[in-house]
Image (cartoon, rainbow, N blue to C red):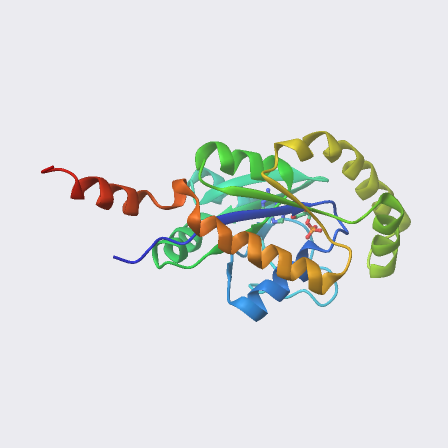
Amino acid sequence: MTKRGVLAIISGFSGAGKGTIVGELVRKYDYAISISATTRNPREGEEEGVNYFFKSREAFEKMIDEDALIEYAQYLGNYYGTPKEYVMRQLDAGRDVLLEIEMQGALKVKERFPETTLIFITPPDVSELRRRLEGRGTETPEVIGRRIARAKEECAYMQKYDYIVVNDQLEDCVEQMHALLQSLHYAGYNQLDLIHEITAGFQDI
Ligand code: 5GP
């Protein structure tokens, strides 16, 4: 029987470097990554079906009605959601799946699937966060201000995460994340089949 993959959610302040880290994990270690649907406009360089599935509000609300999303949330006035079918198919095929989603969605997935691991990525401090957001060069000062205000609110929920990882040096952070993700395979809740098999072996004793 194929061992089911593990499901991990990566969240973090906007500008924490989650996208880059997840990209490196996929490139180096072949994790499966879910591509979200969103109603926000594409940023320069973003591609349909690569970064997101870009949807109208109407099309997104249809996905909600059809229960085609594991979770969805509104973030700064736009919908974001995780299409269900792809994630379930990858997990069943034994691949480890990463979801890069914000907190409201992360907590909803944990409620629905408690075996999900929540990992929060943070820069070392707030001045580094601001530097990274400004360095992107893709957002207006107003949007950067809103993202920092949102990050301040999000601090209150960091404790709900199973693991917090500091992204100081990118390469170190990627290796720490990979080690952490691999260790999840040994967790009891990810080895229910093995536990049942061993338990069954004792049946006639
Ligand atoms: P951005 O607009 O910067 O691409 O994303 C804004 C926020 O939405 C980020 O915190 C990102 O992790 C989150 N996000 C992206 N996809 C999803 C999703 O499918 N569900 C939820 N709940 N959040 C998402």
